Image 1 (cartoon, rainbow, N blue to C red):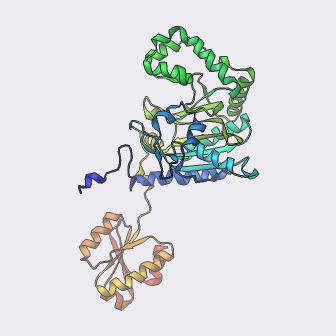
Image 2: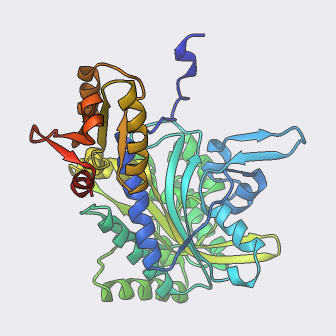
Length: 415
């Protein structure tokens, strides 16, 4: 069968060296930042019951109606690949005992959405996110936003901005939606067909539409904030004041809404100019999700790693900067040296020294070429003469110098 039959599916990619070095850096530094804030890792299944997502995200959202990968197993159960990380994390919290009521957890891993692939957006994409469970508290919202900015700084990204809004309490939602529909209804016929459908199913999403025709219709529509109670506006003001006390500048954007139904109170986006017109780097907010008999309150965010990498690369950061330290390479001249060098390689690795060698007895030129390709900083060469003398020829590949050492001297050099 032709090899082209086994290429990754459209919108899905292999991640291999050197690209993977940048991914590893993001993951390692994220773990360091999360640990300082006392968040712990949770790993939820990639495959969940479809009902978890339709219930949590909203059965009229674009994610549920257009983008999920769904299947039915042999037992007739309807399952879906996870399109985001919050629903599974909240399910875990809801299934736990009292100790999960104020859980602070983070996750990393692949998510899946069947949407049109484009720059920075794939059908299998990867997110780093966190969830802080607990009753609504503007200070908690501010802490999570501050953490997110610290994470961006740890990754070396400068120039990101926070856009912030509120969408109020669940009990206000019906009145807000009706107020928006009443304001838009006189110009309903001017909306494109897909926007007319959204008017009925998810009118909030019209507010952040980039379609000029939609923007013209909603230009004079009251913002969500204007339709909310004083309690909700005060909550947002406390979040903003807390962030400013932490010397974090934010932009209030009254057009900002989130596409999932579980959000309440604070919502935000992180944007970066390096991503072009589609400049959203990540999103977050406070949420309230009903899982079985439990209502889970929390606040969190998710950052797309592919988009994060695109933003980093736009500033000149590359994967090669995070490549592993060059290893030691061992060259064997003859069968006897090959066997002895296996023992040497084992000893070096046990002492924490990264090393590699040819396991076949190729000519020295071929072995040295391999060492150079691997970027080895030191090459150890042993043949019959070195075995007889109990010595090791060591070549410094950067300087081009060579010396003959005994074992104690070799270990001092390498460690």
